[in-house]
Image (cartoon, rainbow, N blue to C red; front, side, top):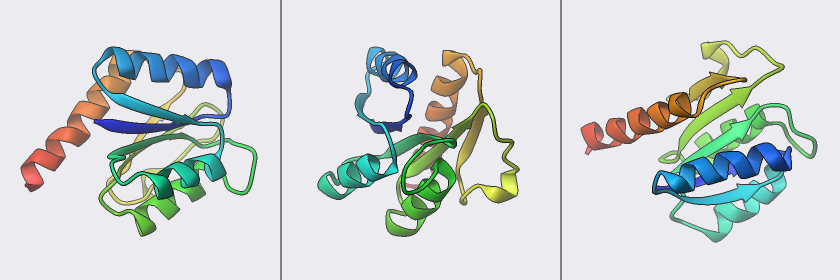
Length: 122
């Protein structure tokens, strides 16, 4: 699966990218929402966006997730936060949520669940 990881902390972003690549995914990284949007516009093969909530720039991860849901509805979403509590009602439809710190198997299981929901819908 082609995944876009949006995380402003470079070491965290590199760690997530590495785990996902080690598990067979093609992964693209972005440090903020503007970089993420540029990648989404340039590529039509992104199937999942994993975004942190607390990011500097023109929009935070919640705003980015809402934009992705409205402009690219088929793209799956996972929202991650370590500082800001997010209620399920605040997430875009179908988005998953992980609270930091999370373990890699939790992220991988959520990605698998989202992938299976694609298979069921097909």
